[in-house]
Structure formats: structure tokens, C-alpha cells
Length: 305
Image 1 (cartoon, rainbow, N blue to C red):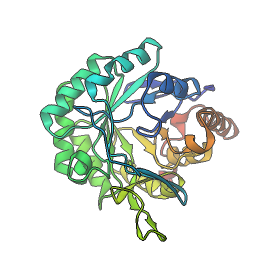
Image 2: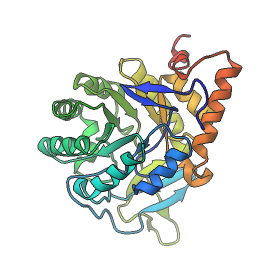
Image 3: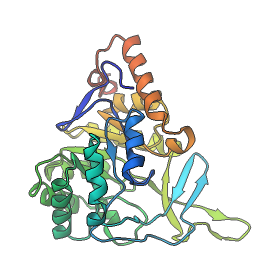
Image 4: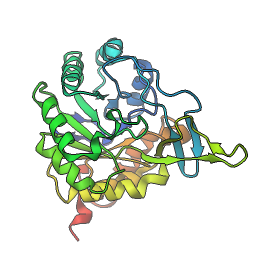
């Protein structure tokens, strides 16, 4: 499940392997996320939770496109309070949990963070970057000052690690990562989905009810990898790579670019839950074949050229 040398520590969060699920792809029930953990993930990440229950956008919200999945779910969730029992169930099973959440105001961010920490979350992932919720909290990650302010406000009220998930839909992701670090981020998750769309040639209209959505899967790997590289050049906090990881080679590429761990989402739809164990096994072989003792020895190696 998790071979020798796979254990990593990300901002104080100890993981038995460098793989996690990406928020939003697999749902959020405790039994489902327990399957992710049992498949080899080092920790599980919840679907993004908000201050109140949210139904999201009307169908159609998901379509398969070249190289990935396009979705405009609109952050449906039961709300923080509606999810706490599931979180406690996961913790009762001994599963490390990273709670992803969003809000619209600083007080909401703070109250939600405190509630999730009290319920036992091992770390928080600030979703400041969902590309399909219009003018709501989705594009906070496009503004460096807002990212710094929100991050600092959350860090003021919790003691557990805070990861800030950034958007690739910006002109200077490195600058925004620096802002998150200034705000006290313990790690950066890079990146959320790419803003995209699909049009039906027969019906002559956009496929998604929201018109645009977020593209995930192998189609975005090169963009996400570039983002991790640029962020690694300017911050000292750990980076979690996310976007198009389908196999062990993808994971290693992210590590070489500067990521300490990776999140895997869309690949589960194509390869099943076994993808986490297969990636772990491949990383273990890579370490052995290259005379490396741990994942940490791989992180950032491509920068030392």
C-alpha cells in the first residue's frame, strides 16, 4: 500500500504516502473517502464546504471532453454544520482529513475554519479558486491582496495547517502564491481547474447550463506543472501538485518541479480507486531505481540544473 520511503510531511501533516484525492471529484461521504484512504492515499480531502447548504447549478453540469472532464457543479454541499458528523466518522476510522472549504466574507471563513478544526480536521484547504461560481467566492485567488487577507484571517483562529488552493486562471500565479505565504499559508495547493467551455454543434448552444466550467484531467497537466514550477521558484512553503496526475510518472514530474505531494481526482474516473496504490508503487520503484531514499529527495530536483 505504502512502500518504504513514501512517507512525507507537508507543513506538519504526516502522510504515509504522497498521494491524496483532489477535492470535488469523488463526493464527500465518509465511506467513500475511507475507500480512498484504504486504496493507498496518505490523507483524504473533502469536497469544498460552505457556510450554508448549497444546491449548485442545474444540469447539465458535467461533460467528458478531450483529455479530461469539464464540470460546472457550482460547489453543491450540505454546509459545514451538515457535514461535521461525516468528518467525525472519518476521524473515528483513523483517516487523516484535509477539509476543503470556501466562504464569502472574512467572518465566515473564520467561523467555518474554527468549526472544522473543532470537529477534528487535520488540515484545512482554503478553496479560493473555483472557476464556475460567478462573482461569488470563486475568483478570490485572482487577487493577491484578498488571498493574503483571507489566509491571514484563517490562520488567526486555527492551529492546524492551512493549505491555500490557487487558480491557474490568473496572469501571475507566483505572485499570488507569495501573497498566500505572506498571509501565513502553511502550504500551497496548485492548482484548481482551468476555466473552459464546450459547445454542442447540433443544438448550437453551450453544453453546460452555466456556459463555462472547470476543466480537469490530463489536458491540464502541463499548465498545472508550470504553475508548480513557478511557485516553487518564489516560496519556501511546501506545494501540493494537482492537475492531471494519472500515473506514477506524472507524480514524479510534479515532485521534480517542486511538489511535496500530489492530489489525484479525475484519474479515478478512468482508473478506479486503485490509482492511488499504483502511483505509490511506481514512486517506490522510481526511488529504488535511482538510489533515492525518500520522496523528499526528489522534491525540486529539476530546479538544480
